[in-house]
Length: 207
Image (cartoon, rainbow, N blue to C red):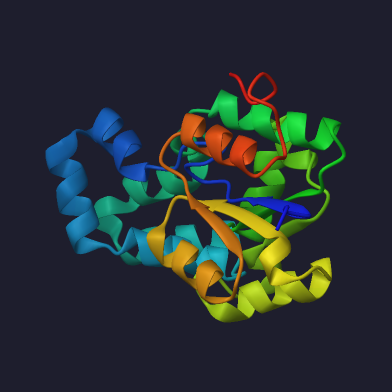
């Protein structure tokens, strides 16, 4: 079935999301390992992605761990440096799909405030037909409920949805629901999948 809707994940599909790289660069690998072993920063971020306030969650976590206060606050204060680099070929694919009239959406684990901030830094995050942002929906991937909510909003058959995400768990749920899905490892692979689906020509999918 030719897809009637294309859905992009954002982290590691359109922009980088490897917080450990930032902490290695700024604080050194040894200190980063000690921090991440002592404080569950990914759970902190999950709380934000589920809709809790961005600043409050991070600053409260920092205050609860005074030894690491500066480093934890950096997750907020230097957030844009954690969310890099832009994956330019993926942005090109997004824009070329939209130029051809293909409905393009995002389905992302992202906080309400952090997404709003990211939209001021990355113009392409304002170009989706519909934004499915976990913080607004108060449920994160790979919970099947978020996929159900997407289906209800789009109103197209699950088999007509083509979804790209970098996490196998998220892809598995999509496939289980009957979606077409692509495990994103690099933008050229995603480009090839869009060509195979008949949505772009090889020239249109080029970097």
